Image 1 (cartoon, rainbow, N blue to C red):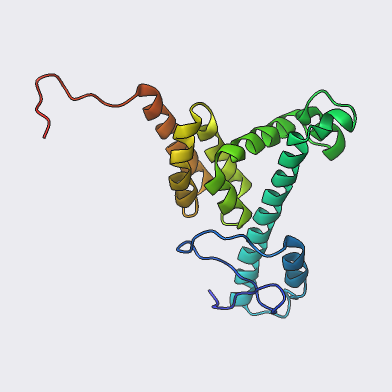
Image 2 (tube, helix red, strand yellow; image 1 turned 90 degrees about the vertical axis):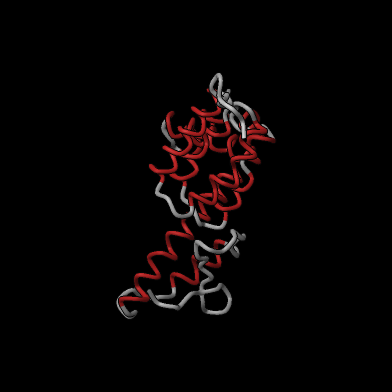
Length: 191
């Protein structure tokens, strides 16, 4: 991969590596405009590969921004005023042309991200995708305190796992949490 990264306003993007802590990206509109300046036919193969990664990260950050806007819209209950629609999901179906399943999924993700601030921050930085957030979201169901404790671990591991792996980790975590703490076997000594 090329060492070339770009930062909006400087002619270079700022792409974070998996070792870095998540940080908010510059304005998504600026990044998209900067990305659009590169002609894929005139860049090297390494630069093209980096552009593909950069564009994906920007798309993730844009999706996170959209969910943040939907969250604010939901908290203001604008869906009841602008329509009126009986629910946020129904409003999203009508106004954003989402299927019932997609709209319900968006509402579920918005509620989950309220409980998972580290996941939300990592998503805003473009380091994980909507699919990762979907995989982590079930952790927010149930005990909010437990979810907040697991959040940093799940968000960090999502930066190097694909969404299917994250989903398996969350399922295992939820199963272990439901079973409760393991008790020592009768007759065994603690030590």
